[in-house]
Length: 147
Image (cartoon, rainbow, N blue to C red; front, side, top):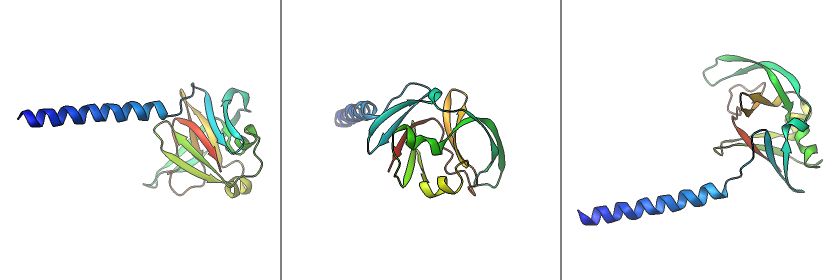
């Protein structure tokens, strides 16, 4: 019985150490900002400095249900210029829980108004119109990596 208690205590301490290390390594930004990791260097951008536009359209979830979006947001196609990047192949958008989605430059070039960072209450959300399901619907966006 004592042996099990000691093993449980050791595992609990190890879990706490791993959690602390992980939480300290996460990128943190204040609400309304997004960290952009680019080949030219990391930049924190205040979304208030970007042009806010009206966004409307509909997205479809994996069940085939359609949801209308009518909000304000920022065109994803404008993000690379914030980091002074002209040549890139894709943007990877990360949520605060590390869920991510990829939007390619080709998709943005073909239709620059299909991918948006929209205001969603107190957070930012990626919405990609035209997807057959909403896998790329990323909530609580905190980081964008330009590759």
